[in-house]
Length: 121
Ligand SMILES: [Zn+2]
Image (cartoon, rainbow, N blue to C red; front, side, top):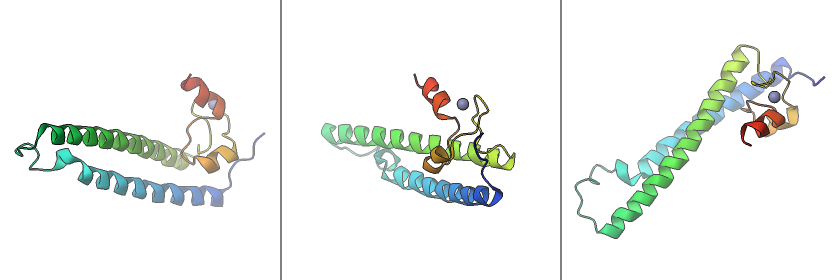
């Protein structure tokens, strides 16, 4: 039987998750600023085609980065919700305790290793 995280441990995790959330939010904001498509002059500029292509690629990279950050944000929200329900550290699929070593690495982990692997097979 795996040891359950203690209350003070949970408290630490919670503040770490909240800090991480803030950091990710900030990163998303920064990325949005870097997005060439967010430039209000973009639509009206008479840029050469190669500039347009570069902007398109830049835009797509940024969108992909934002998406992955937002996925992490959603996972962190889920983790925070689980903390408030007293279910933190339990796998969402099989209900088993997620090993501490894994939670240390990925505090917002939603599944145990074997469920995670079966999800992405
Ligand atoms: Zn599981």
